[in-house]
Image 1 (cartoon, rainbow, N blue to C red):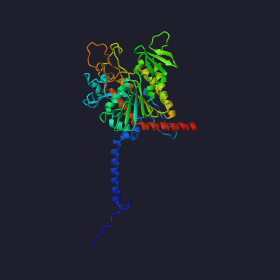
Image 2: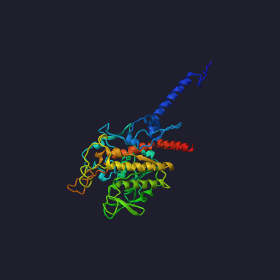
Image 3: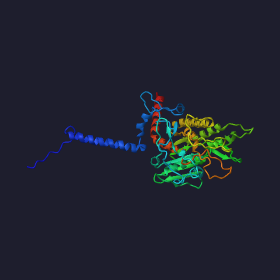
Image 4: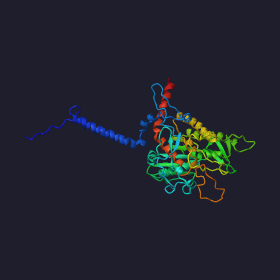
Length: 447
C-alpha cells in the first residue's frame, strides 16, 4: 500500500523546523538591513543612529559661543547638538598623496581663467593634497550623486560676489562626474546665471551682488554708494521659487564706501572727507547683512532655507593687494600657529551676530536660517590662492596683480561643498530639533 507522508506541521510550537526556518529568515533580513542602510545613508535618517554616539565630541569654547544649545528639561529630551562643529578642525595630508584631484582644468569647462592655476603653470601640487578633518568627527568627501539626488526637483540660488561665483564653479566641476548642466540663463548677463541638471530636475543659479544691499559705483572708480536700508532687488526679487538660498559677501566692503540711509549720506568708510563722518567698515557690513536678512524675513513668497556662508579671508603678505602683496606659501597653517584676528575676526563676528539675530526672528516665523561656517578652515589655507598663476607671465607688466583673494580650482574651496552636502543630509535632524524646541517653549509659555 502506498504510504502518504503527512505534511510537516510548521506552526509555532509544533515543530522545531519552524523555529529553524524563522531563525534563518530573520538572520537574512537582519543582514539585508545592515547592508542596505549604510548604502542609503545620505537619503535616510540613518544619521540619527550616529548622532548620539558623537554628541560627546569636544568642541572649542570659541565655537560653542555661537552654536545654539537645545537642552533637556523635565520629561522632554532632545539632541543637544549636531555631531560636531565642522568649522573647528585641522587640515591633514590625504591618506593617498598620489590621489588625483576630483577634477582638473582638462575635465571641467566651468573654471574661469583667473582661477585656472594648473593651466597657468603653478609648479607645486601640494595644495591639492590636504583634506579638512573637523575635531570629533570625520567629514565625508563630497559625493556628487548623493547631492544631486537630494536636490532632485529642487532649486538652489547662490547670492554674492566673485567668491560666491568661485564656489558655484567649484560645485559645477564636482558635479560634472555625474552630469553637466544645461545653461538656461534668461540672458547673456554673466552676473545672473541659471543652470539645469536635466536628469534630476535640479536648477542652480548665481545671483550677483557686491554688497547685498542696493549699491552703485560712483563717478570715482572703486568708490561705492551703499543704500544700507534698501534691498538689492536684483537678487531679492528673484529668490521666490528657490528651495535654498546661500548668501555671502565680504571683500567688496574693503573699498571706500559712502553710506546712505533714509535718502541721505550718514557717513562713510575710508572717504577722508572733513564733512562726512567716518563710520568704518563694520557699520556698513552689519547694516548690509541686517537689511539682506530682513529681505528674506519679510518675503511673502520665499519659504525656503537660507544659508549664510561666512567670510573668506584674503592672504596678502609683504604688502597690500596693490603694493606688491603676494601669497607664496605652499602648505596650510596649523590652527595652533595662526589665529583669526584683527579685521578678519571683526568681520566674522559681525556676520555671526547678525546671523543669530536673523535666526531668532526666523524661528518665530518658521523661517529657517543655516550657517555654512567656512572662515576658520579657509583662514588656514594661505596656499590655496592663484597668486600669479591666474594668467600667463607678462614680463614686467605691473597691471597684473597677484590674486590672494580668489581660490584655485581645484583647490581648498572644494570643501565648501563637502560642508553643504553634510548639512543637507542632516537637515531632517535639525528641523526636528527646532520643532521640539518650539513645542517645549510653547509648553512653558502655557504654564
